[in-house]
Length: 305
Ligand code: ATP
Ligand code: ZN
Image 1 (cartoon, rainbow, N blue to C red):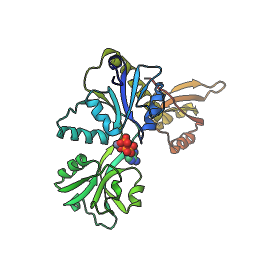
Image 2: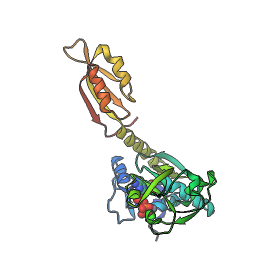
Image 3: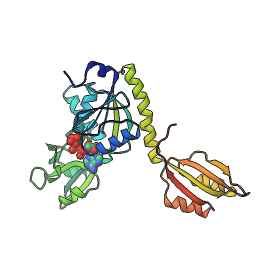
Image 4: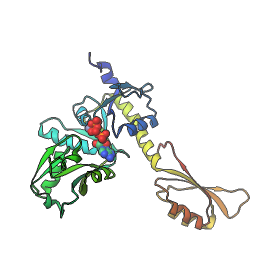
């Protein structure tokens, strides 16, 4: 019998996530913060949430777009780089490519860049004319170089792309970069960013069974709430009444503050506000120079608008 029986298919929301890799810890933490409890043993391909009708399917990230597009799972979390590349590959294979993009998530940041050997003189994309370029992302690379009429040959590698030039397999590479340390260690320099990516939540492009839709309607606002909370801070301070408008003007992305009387004080009040953006030291110092005291910045765990 298939691991996913018919009843589950209709009633339990199925979400594909990366089994083990750079997105996994963040995704598991996101689910935990959303109140989804599930077995954390990564050897289990399928984890049933204990407290909600949700099944989590652990797979390689490359398989996630196809599982959503083939309607094997309802939702998936994957890097935009893999999503775009797989979509183009499936188009050329005449496979279904429809999906709904529900939201971009606040992790999995990386960029797909072209890197060449340090000693090469690089003067722009035309310098790559006729090159052999090693990459895991031939479609994204081709799309970019076609825009600039650069002809090249791609060498498909699914790992250790950065050693290809030294090994004589290619003249340049096109690979994911975060800090650039790997490139540096391999005598390469980053010369062009062709795509920037984050993780995204996608959904199959088909109406869900009502039971599943109800679960999706419950967890999607929770995911948004966890992300909004992460960016936001609760800020409290005591402030002079006559400086309130100046203080409000410098609080980043803040909503209307609550102003609370301070017992025994005529000219000072307490001000509480949720700020939707990061609060920098410089802003705190400006607040202080406007006469604010006891400035507290507190993280927010959950938020529901
Ligand atoms: P799998 O075994 O699932 O196929 P993988 O080796 O293809 O894993 P990872 O290296 O775990 O993939 O990266 C997964 C995704 O994480 C990438 O496709 C990208 O969207 C994102 N990512 C974020 N930061 C980085 C980074 N510094 N380097 C590479 N990928 C990153
Ligand atoms: Zn992968």
